[in-house]
Image (cartoon, rainbow, N blue to C red):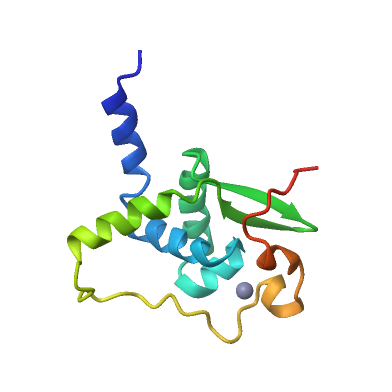
Length: 131
Ligand SMILES: [Zn+2]
């Protein structure tokens, strides 16, 4: 039988990694493919994929296909209330150094390059059926 505190601590573990927090901040703006996320983080793509898999298996994000590409989105945006709540405790004055998570001008992802699947940017809250 699963103890509530065990389940809760397992859930918190999903957030206890700086790269996963950065990925979630990127996905706060819009759903994104792995190459878009990787262009911002400038890490090995296999490493980014590994962290995306942890978040997906933990039920934090889901992927959606658009043509040949896979876009990741946050399933329940209440996670940002958790993240913002922690931030307000550990950095109430906003003095800690923050990674700007800037998108490079030459992002190679299909959306930035060709405008593919752009309709999802305009409607981030919409549910998309997986077909
Ligand atoms: Zn991009």
